[in-house]
Length: 420
Image (cartoon, rainbow, N blue to C red; front, top):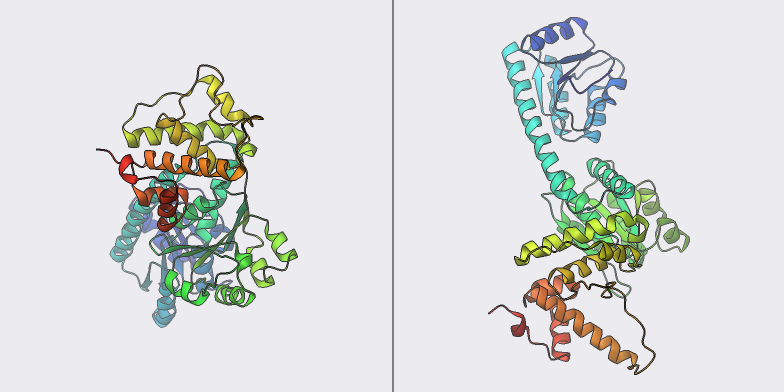
């Protein structure tokens, strides 16, 4: 059985060689596991294992290259050193191209073997430490400890490692784009471009150009059902290979099955996403996360604005839990930010800043009410971001030009919101 105490896995069908390498490595203090038939043992390597694999290229029951592919599919950054005889050097070079860390040619110098193992383990330990640090930072995006939050985090982490197309669906504001960003930043493609595009009914999107722009990075498509069938087919053709040239993530309001039933998604893409679709639940379905999310964003806003944090009362917390949150997490974040800047000060009685009551007298025309509400939202964002238009436009998710047009419509001057 494999356990994480081992830091070297030796794979060779020659028992004498296994014994020789094992004795040498153990004398240097390494915990060594030897294996002549590796098929079962390789699947037992734990996630984030701080260890190195030494593997012969020629094995009796399975090709060393095939074994290499199995291991790199599970963890592309696992250090694997291939061992080769004199006549097998071209095969070993091919192994390095497929993801092996290095190769050693028999007969192996004991000194060289120890140097290679030491260097590989040092790099692996640093990598895993950085991976945990990055994960801790990214997990700050997924606030809460509900069973669902823990499950979705775990699923995204596993999907990030295997680099396959992913289908994320759910209501607006449930964290679909956040999940896509999380996947990208956890993956091997995190240094490559991240491009997010919304497919609109009347717009023309050139998939070939997008693929060229995204290079080896991540392409996020929202509402793929608006994409013409020929462009969908081009996507499928590009992804219909074992080594994906880029990571595709699709964001949708409806489940995958609905799209294929409505004949708005081609079959090839349906089957690519079939086993990698995740539903992002509405906030009310993981209600135990409401208060932690609210408090986190109040803290964050207070720190950014250098304001004192005001602990929400028990009454306010209960009021938060009683809301429907039709805008989901995005709406909750907005309320938390407004609470932090004092626009929604807590009352001694039951807080009323979240729900609005319908008045039966002096009702204004609908368009006038909508205009007033839109003006209020823009002004609140300008207050919060102190008149910084780029940040306001990004927060409201509208183009700068459209924001300026709305501000002109309501007579709003950004200068009035800048700090003097």
